Length: 31
Image (cartoon, rainbow, N blue to C red; front, side, top):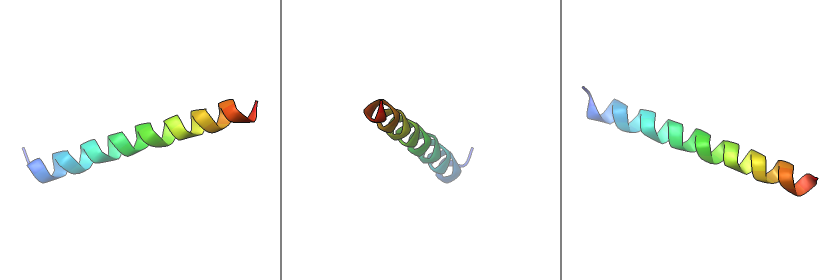
């Protein structure tokens, strides 16, 4: 297993989580 590609994949997953959290926070604030 390539460690570098695994790290990149995890970082992408984390970035997506953070992005979704920001979207949810924005949606809650607009209500």
